[in-house]
Image (cartoon, rainbow over all chains, first blue to last red; front, side, top):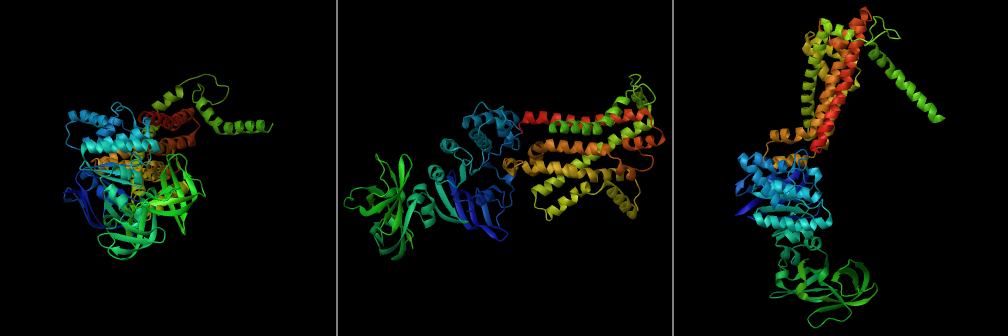
Length: 356
Length: 261
């Protein structure tokens, strides 16, 4: 049974539709990420699950029960915000104990539960301090402890890592995932950061302009994007106009740059037959080489136009005929210089195809 | 040279403003019946006479009761109005805010006469309740201005966090919102008390016969004679209206330091 279900949800603000008719199932115990750019409706969905917004149409079910009319404080949810939202006038221990006071937890058990939660987030000694005495990362850990100590049915995380520094963000990502796996709570995570989504999720829901573009495991969403939007939002992709000339046991797509490409059928699930199509080539699957490719690998001559050096990798903008493409390659010794003539290598099985 | 002139000018301005007050305070300790310099001796005699003056003591009690009630009612109304205006989408919010703040902008005499005429028209006579209502009307804007400013700075997230943890909206208000806006609430209450305690214009219009507050008492005493008792009463007023806010600010700072807000 799914822990949370959005059933034909629509949310309008005046004449603006923030969420178009959406149905979504969030499996018990899963870490589900709502991913999309700002304004795509991901936070609106989260706030409707939380009970901070009422859906205009449709039902929200938590644990199989319709909760549309259940106010937020009776939904038993853990909520973590981007800016921590700790109570500044209470100590860390009082913050964590807050939710327990409104539940049938015997007073004597509260300190032990608080300590266990602080241990879980690896901040066992800060109970007596005030939030402003802690760093941003520490405050977010306390916010997490406060949300999970009440043993919520669902943990809702609204961009919890966005306010942190880059390095800290990656540490917290690992930490957050570890804690979630440890307690096994169903988690809905909202972010606009694709690497967070890919690293942490069991399931990614890619959203754009109030609609769900694709739901899938990280590898599925990454390797087999269901739409041009998904292909572009998760990493860098080259998308070219093409034509499907064979649609059977194997799918063959032809475009002006790469010629005939035999795409695995699994990577073109939405392509229904011959006709206009789009070829999706991930930037990191396009390899630059000074030699032509061996047999079975597509090889296209090209010229390097721009070199964007990033340390362990380089992003090249290259021109092959009329088409500008981008490629992200790990560096072996020196990167190619701008103006160099190269061969682009592309394995057909790394390509995906979309309906045109 | 130029700076020197500005310095002297500044001293003169402050002297002009505060010397009369200083003279009043100084003379209240004068042993002599007639307020003239040089003083012939120090004495607390006038304070003692104040203490034994029934009319003054009655006025004092009236002022304090009036001030406290004004503070309590104004603060309560101010908090509720601010909550509504800041946290909820009230239609015509700007118009309501302007209307609530208006009593500061209207000259006090006009407001005093208007309220009196209005109640006269309704056939309601002067009473202590009317006096209280008048004081609430024109201390309310101060409370609303201070509390609203504070409430805007309290993030909605913090309240939403409390709600998500199981506190009802009312519990959230008392556990989170109110403690966070306490410094503003205290400041608003102090404002209301001192303004009410100090007020004379409105009070002269609204007070029922036989009721005197400290300022109206001083006013009526002045009409008879200039008694040194008035100096002593003035000193007490100054201590209360200057000392209370200072004390309040000190307490607020202590509290803020402790809670880290």
